Length: 101
Image (cartoon, rainbow, N blue to C red; front, side):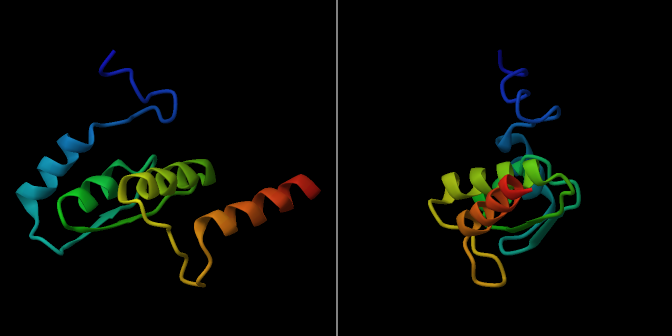
């Protein structure tokens, strides 16, 4: 059960606590954590949990949506794009564009 939980959303899900422990070993509070293969966002969630600033890069829009949704649920904050739009607004625009063609 433990290892297979979460594999339905991403093939290499890792526990947030495990990643947070590694971040604590190698960084200071407020440091930037960059995950160039963000996937479902575990590293940015772990960074948030231990007081670091997490940034992620991901090519797959489905994983981006998942990572942002997970971050919003964990922090109880709305993700805001640099253009000022919320993630919900951007996702709604994208879904509307996909529905039209």
